Length: 319
Image 1 (spheres, helix red, strand yellow):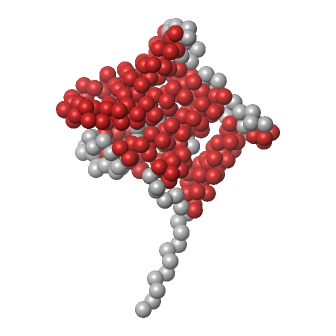
Image 2: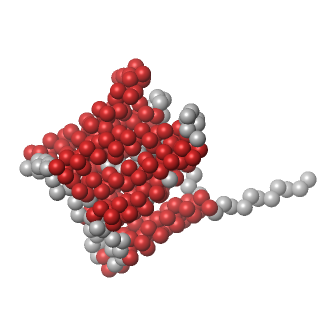
Image 3: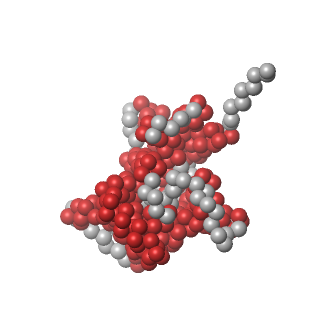
């Protein structure tokens, strides 16, 4: 969607006016709104094509946030003039492709499974950062990545090892895996780019770039006869995706990053998976399958393992 808010590559200074409890409450509310995006997208899927949903959500969220960053118009214009192609590339990977793939996958898989698979994106980020940026992966991070990969395979194969041998995977789950990869690549590209402007204006610029990159896909979808036929339910879903699940979600996440730092704020990502499962159960009537639970367990183990297991420091040589 991207269902995840735009992550900032650097730790930020504490935001004024927010206590620690307020910062965590802001982050939790942001992830709850983010989880709601999966539900709204699944709800709107019968009425609106994935690329139409992607285009309109990005465009409307950008339009809502644009007046809020009016003091930064100068640096925004300067960034676009000097690095337009780079901005377009980052926005296309992290927002257009990532969201379009999720919306496409939700046409043939449930929101709960999509939310669990997207929890794989931090592991993909570590692996891509190792390849692209040369960041150290480490033994435990590598083991964690393998565990998370095993969890993803369990989910996309629906727990059937025969499906793995015969390469019989659900198309919906594979679209979501592709989206998680795009999010990991986007995060690495954002780290390397270092656009050098405040976080919220960066969000607005990338939302606009994502909408521009989504326009050809949207027009292609229209020419293929997949035009939108929105009724009241679809309009409500789109309103949520652009407003509470779009502009407000990004704003709250950015506030939490300012108060907590990007590392701690991003670690709360895993609340999104819980919220998606809960909302999907309450609003869509979905239920967890055994393979979802086992897959989630492997993914969570792969994410937590590198953080909780630390190598013992080597004893200093005595004089």
